[in-house]
Image 1 (cartoon, rainbow, N blue to C red):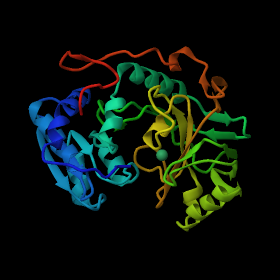
Image 2: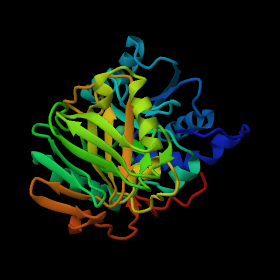
Image 3: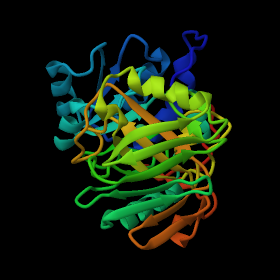
Length: 352
Ligand SMILES: [Fe+2]
């Protein structure tokens, strides 16, 4: 979610250096075609700064402003680009434009938060390695099971579904990423699996933008939420889901865990989603960034949750919100080496 802010003409100048370093991590090189996608609500200084950064790297960069993201001309433009920097103002991960562009080999990089958050969570090699280790763990698994002290007991099936590792950098053809992030997730089979999801006090409900203050019980059958019980927030959730008049709004979209040690649970939004060793589960649309996913509807909601235990097949990877495997555990703050050979700290402490 973007924030409103006061700007003057110089705002972009403070971002060019940080965005150039990010483009270097995205393996941008001279002669590449970089498309900056904006809509009327985009932060103008983000687009300007990415344009300046891309020019510094010798790329052929251009910008489009478009209020409707799914028209053919826009999809064609994305497919022809080597890298799309998506700074549109709304949530933007699900839809045919993503899938078609990724299938064509375009790298997609989503940007959508305040500068301070990006600066604090500048991508690191250490994060990338842990995300990729998690992706590898999830890759060949057929089932995932999740439990929590509050009573969550869920099983999902993912045979044939590739997991996605998200580490804030789109550096491989056909890859989507979002900065800031740090997650391993997968779209499980949408019409199978279930059990009970219990949202416990302190868990977070994205889109509704509320921390959970009393237990919410969501019963799931055949991949769908079939009952919601609890207090006031359960009633709000019922109304939220019902407004879309779609069975698919209740359907499992993706599930996985967060990896970003620097995320702060008390900063609502992207920090919750990527929070270290949180379990995040989402419902609704998942066509687009998840290959093989099948649900396209008008809604998508995420529930980052604390203190869960997680099994990938019979491998116990997380117990009460603590990683059990070395390859998933934080290794300390390690610098990241850019394509131009410079080294920078993971905390992205440069002014942005
Ligand atoms: Fe999501």
